[in-house]
Image (cartoon, rainbow, N blue to C red; front, side):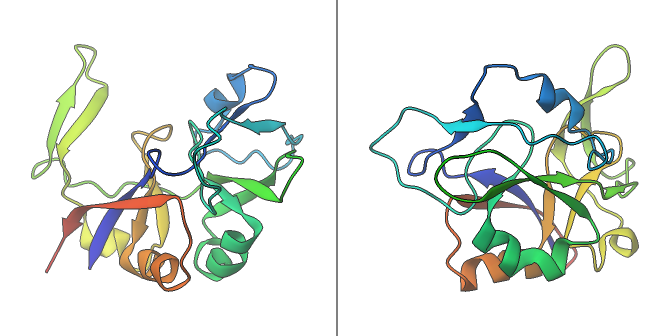
Length: 176
């Protein structure tokens, strides 16, 4: 089993930003449900005409999926995310609010950098608890709900087989 961290191909593909410049929505994307209070926000593309459109473009704070990506990955992720519509004038895209927060880190075997307060700054090395992450296709670490999104090998395989664009994967853990 492998766990991969999502990142984005910002060198080749377009990314989104909030159209009105109010980035406060990003602070709300912290693993808690938002669907009841959600009002679609307007996103626009960064002004980078040389870059390509993608199925999973860069956006600060949360993954954004095209309608195609939602349809292809939906069966893997539906129980772990909220699919929140956005306003975009060209195609259908959705913010993916990952609400699957897992207490899945073996802190004794992981390498963690902390702030003086004791709060986690970053991981130098992840050591996941295999029983907790098995059969989880998309999740966040409970102790860092506003940070990285992690996915399963099966998620990655669907993305690659479907030729979904804009996304990169960094393998951060394997129990093989």
